[in-house]
Image (cartoon, rainbow, N blue to C red; front, side, top):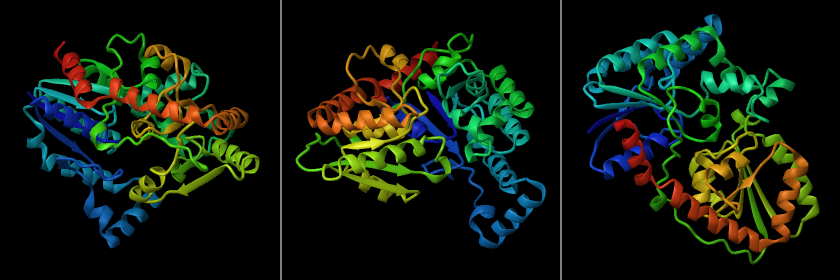
Length: 377
């Protein structure tokens, strides 16, 4: 079967592609590989306006004057130059309802071409979209990435998340849903808002290529190493302010028993080298389930502070913790960290359970089979 995967944000489509290839399918990935430079087969990256220094300066000036990023136009041009390579597929999957990240006008033009020239299109619900943002705004979650925006609407991530409830994005959402067979949620943060939607399928967890993520059982012989990697763009969205305050308290309370590594927006290779040393990794506080960063750390046997709400535990029938449910509450984080520091055997046990959980629920070939089953139905 010929399969086209459209868009890539987090290694999700790359991992799914590997699983599908293992099962003998012909898979092509198209996207703007600007974000973290994940591999794509057909790149529509706006390299002329982004990588050329002089043209990029011109692009920035244009943006300041009229609030239009002309790189989004170049992206659309590159798509249509390569358009023939995006036709004739049995299955298309969009990574999100805004998968290519051009202007809404050009996004609709590109998606219209894809819908028209391929057989069946499916949508993955992962990342911000109209339905999940609307659900957040209605306060149906106990907390969400929009929780910090109530106190400070000017935080960097707020306007990007809230754009999905603007008229143009609602129209894009309706256009996409009109042309897809169904929408497939990737974790509880998207499954819950879609629960009663007529086009929603079962939750299919994100695929993880575990053979590339080496598991080393944790061993606590000296200090417990806590890693906190901060992406400054998403500082408040991930709840890093809560983690930093909790770590200040932990550092004073257990000065001789912990080593705390904090980084800010460092290259990915440096990030991995430092987090490989850690026993505990602090990921995010506003989610109900885990994203890719947490899942890959869990595959390596780390104890990850991330989303693991009751709904997640019940969905996977878990009676023991495979990660720590990190709440946006400093006292809760301090209590959880203190418990682990004082009970190092629990760190080792959770690390083992984390790896077992990823192998059982997120194996990339098993997940690829689940996608094929949904696409077939």
